Amino acid sequence: MIANVPEYSFYAMGGVIGVLVVSTIIQFLLPLKNPDKDYSELRQRITSWWWIIGLLFVFLAVGGTAAIVFFAFISFLALKEFISIVPTRQADRNVVFWAYLSIPFQYYWVAIGWYGMFIIFIPVYMFLLFPMRMVLKGETEGFIKAAGILHWSVMLTVFSVSHVAYLLVLPVNNELAGGVGLVLFLLFMTQFNDVSQYVWGKLFGKHKIIPKVSPNKTWEGFLGGLLTITLVAGFVAPYLTPLTQFQGLIAGILISISGFFGDVVISSVKRDLHIKDSGNLLPGHGGILDRMDSLIYTSPLFFHYIYYLHF
Image 1 (cartoon, helix red, strand yellow):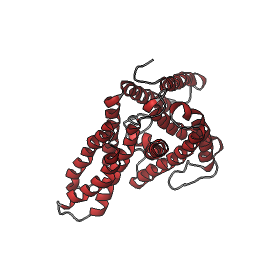
Image 2 (cartoon, rainbow, N blue to C red):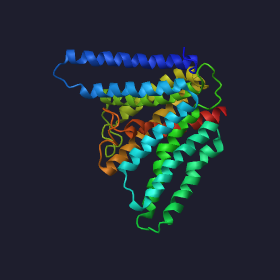
Image 3 (spheres, one colour):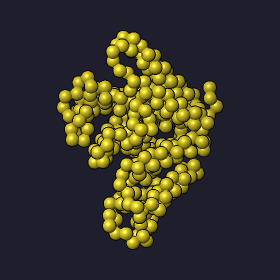
Image 4 (cartoon, rainbow, N blue to C red):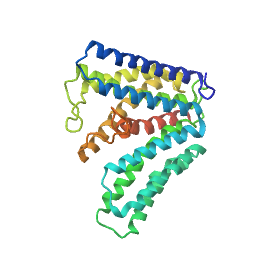
């Protein structure tokens, strides 16, 4: 047993490692059965998952400040990637610096558990600071678009993601899982929702939801994923969170629906920019935003659901 990981969270980690081991074995067996088929993308995806899960578990095991710094670094990578794909003005380079500077401040509020500042720092103070700093340059061409892009980028990649880190410092009424259990529940329900909607869509998908945004999204995939995640969340929630089974069912519905919208919102961004992936940081997955799109929506909503019920 790892000292900083409560019992149920430790078992959950073991379960995830087990799934990765089975996936890796299948990856090696598939080419033997179908030697003419290319499985290189699958290998890349599984390898990337080993790195992602490995790093996540190491920092969660270390706990405390190290885990919060890890999520701050994720926000930095996500913001850097977002800024690299959206149009920004040359005159706003100094404002972009302040966008990056918001990361250590936001995660400092997380580390000290200052909820009041955590919840208003970016939506209020950064919202006001960015245009104030921009107006001093005297460049009015494209002002509204630039201000909107910068603030929205920080809201997506810093404010939303920082809710995951704040789960670690909540005084959770579940000693067998702790804050780590909340993080594991959120992250893996979010990712399992993506997989479930994809699988149900591949098996039964016929009726497209938003074909202009995401042609592969179908009602069958969405509803199948919704039902799957709701049932799984209801079963798992009492072990990893302070939620009852019924409250876990509601959390599953919340995560499934919001995860879908996070996915299609980032898809809309990429279609607007005429790009397939947000980056190439994660082989087989694309960029970090491609992997975090659902989490951008699920993390603040799940956090405030927990906060409303138990704090």
